[in-house]
Image 1 (cartoon, each protein chain N blue to C red):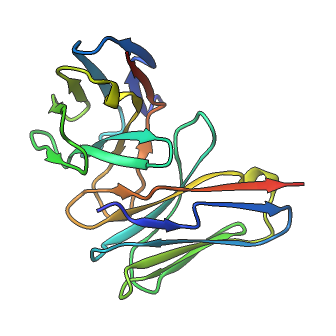
Image 2: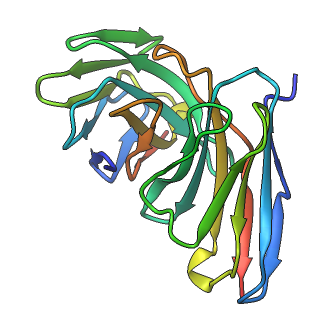
Length: 113
Length: 109
């Protein structure tokens, strides 16, 4: 049982390059999330998706786009990477019912130089 | 919408107790608590759904004051394995989940 799978685990980009972070879950969850984690800032919500076909902005959406491709997959795209986007990115999923936990992927460490 | 946690960091000796607080500026549907070890993903501890609800998990428990939009995590008789960063997560609307800045807990022998 894989749970939440993120790819890649590590990535180095040059300023201005673009890339897509992939996330897939095999738990038939409705809700999926993207967070970034920076020292002293905790986990900040970038975008989330309550169900297939819907996405909503979180606290720090600028510079990012997302796609909920199907129920399993939720991707995060950086169109023109900036050094300020250097961070650890976590994808998470939850069933969407109120009394259930969120499961996290192992994270993607992104460095923009 | 990020909830505020306090303290930012705490150091305990084994066997001591700690309280971590979480407060939100918005009304809460539920509160989650997670623990993250260094270099790993956050792991779920517990969820509180109703105002006044309290839950326990071994020697870790939590309470939720819906009226005050606050939650507290209680760690009793701390063990070395409790070390890590604790996050509260708050649900303020349909399927969102916002996390606080975290509390780094270090337990020393």
